[in-house]
Image (cartoon, rainbow, N blue to C red; front, side, top):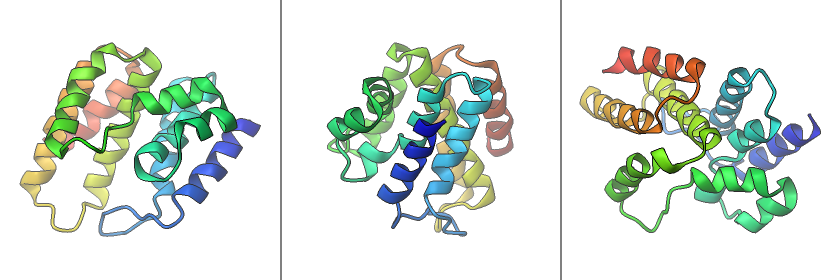
Length: 172
C-alpha cells in the first residue's frame, strides 16, 4: 500500500503541469490513476507493483524521469514494467505506433496488461473528452490502431479484454 501511495505522489509531482488534450483538459494524473485502477481491478489488488507501474507508465516518456530514478525509488520490477511500455520518442509517430503493434507479443503478460489498460483509458477519454481538433475519422483511426495493439497482446486478462472491446465497439 505504501508503495502505491508513493508512486501516486511521484507521478502527480512529475506530471503536475500536464493536462489531457481533451475538451475538459483534465489533470494528467486522472489518466494515470484510471490506468492504475483498471490494473488493480484486473488483479484483484494482488499485484501492487503492476498498479505502481500503471501510475508511473508515462514518466519515462513524458517527463525528465530516468529509469535509474524509477529503479531507486520503486525497484527494478516496476521500472522494467514502465520501460516495457515506453515509446522511443526519437522515432517518428508512425514508427512508434507500428512498433507498439510489432513488439506487443514479446512483452511479459503484466506489461501487456499495462498496455491494454492504457488503451482502455485512452479510448474512454476519446469518447468523453476528445482532443481538440480530432475529427470522428481520426478518433476512429485511433481506435482501429488500438485494436491492433490489443490484438497483438493476445489473451492476457479477460476483464481488461472485455472492457477494451466494450469501449472500442463504441468508437469503431
